[in-house]
Image 1 (tube, helix red, strand yellow):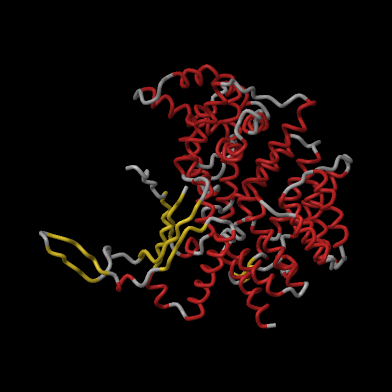
Image 2 (image 1 turned 30 degrees about the vertical axis):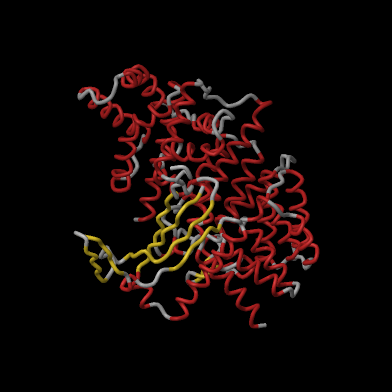
Length: 409
Length: 119
C-alpha cells in the first residue's frame, strides 16, 4: 500500500513536472503554469494512490486543470490571460498528448532554474518547486529559512524568468558543460540537504534525498551522454544505499562500523553501472571523482580491499578539479584512515580561518586525528567544538561519547 | 545583529529524566556554548530554574501583588536562553538548529532590538 502510494506520487510528480515545463516553455511564465496545474496536481495526489495511475497521466492532469480554470474564469477569480492562453494551446497540447510520448521539456526547465541570471541560492528550491511540485513551506524548512522568505525568493525568481524572458532551451554545445554544472550543483544541494537528515527522522527534510535522485535520473534519461550527470547519479546512489545502516537504535554509526548487510545492494549495483558508464567517456569530473571515492569505500567494506591509498589519490584529484572545504577535510580524513595521522594533522593545520571556524566536519576530523595521535587534551577540545556545531542529536551524542572515552584512558 | 534564542522545553520530560539523561543534555549545552564562544558568536545565556519557582509580579492600584507559578499554564515552559551575534537571520537560524534544545524542545528565535543611544 505504501509502495502503491509512492509509485502514484512519483507518477504524479513526473507528469506534473512535464506539464509545467511544457506550458512554461510556451508562455515563459512558470508561476502561471504552476497555478494552472496546482489544483489538478493536488487532485492527482489524492486520486491516484487509490484508483491507480491513469493510462495517460498528462492528459488527465491537463483535463482537470482546464476544468478548474474554466470554473474560476466563470467565477472571475482569475484574470483571464492564462485561461485564454491555455485555450489557445489546448489543441496543440491535446494533439501532443495523443502522440506516443508527451514531449519532455523538463530539462529546459531545469536549465532555466539554474540559469546564471538566477541567484544561486534559489536554484535548488526553484527546481524542487517547479519540476517536482514541492510546496514552499516544505522547501523552506529543508533549507532552514522562514516559509515567508522562501516564498518571496521563489516569487522573485519566477518573475525574473518571465520579465527577463529567459529562454527555455538546451544550451548550445559550447556552453553545455558549464550550464549543466549549475544544474547538477543544484540537484546535489537538494541531496545534501536531505542527506544531513540521516534516516528521515527529521520530518522537515524527509525524502529530499529521494527527490534529488529522481531529478538525477531525469537528467541522465534526457542527457544520457553526459558523464558528470552519470557521476552525480552514482554518487547519490552510493550514499543513499547506506541510509539504513547509518543509525542503530537511534545511535550514529560511522561508515567503517556500519553493518553492510543493511546496505542497499540494488542501489550500489546501479551506482557501479552508472560510474562505469561515465568512465567510458574518459572525461573525469568532480562528481565522478566523488562517486569513485564512495565506490572505493564500498569496496573496502564489502570486499576487504585496502583502498585507503587510492582514496587519498582520488581526493588529490578532486581538490585539483573542484576545491572545496568538504574535499579538503575529506582528504585529511583519508590520510588518517591510511594511517598517516601526522600528515592529516598538518593538512588540517593548514586549513583555518573563515569557512572552517564553524564547519562541523573539520572539527570532527580534527578531533579524530588528535585522538589517534594520543593528544588527548586537544582532542577533547575539538570533540567539544564538533559536538557543539552538530545539528544532529545522534551525531552530537556520538562525539561526546568519543570524548568521554578519551577521558577514561 | 543580535538574536535571542528562547528555549521552550517540556518540564515534565525533564523532571522524569534520569540523572544520566539530564547530564547528557547539560553536556550538549556546554559543547554548544563552547562552539558559540569559539566562533565569536556568544553574547550570553543562562538556564532558568523550574517554572514552579517563578513569581508573577504586578503593580495594581499602588499595591504590589505577587503570585506563585508561571504566567502561562503550558507544558512547554521557558527553560533558558542564549543571546548570540549573527550576521543575518540565516546565520542565526543555523545556530538555532545546532542548539540542543531544537532536538527535543522548541526555540523561539527573535532579533534583539537595538535602541539608539540618544533615544
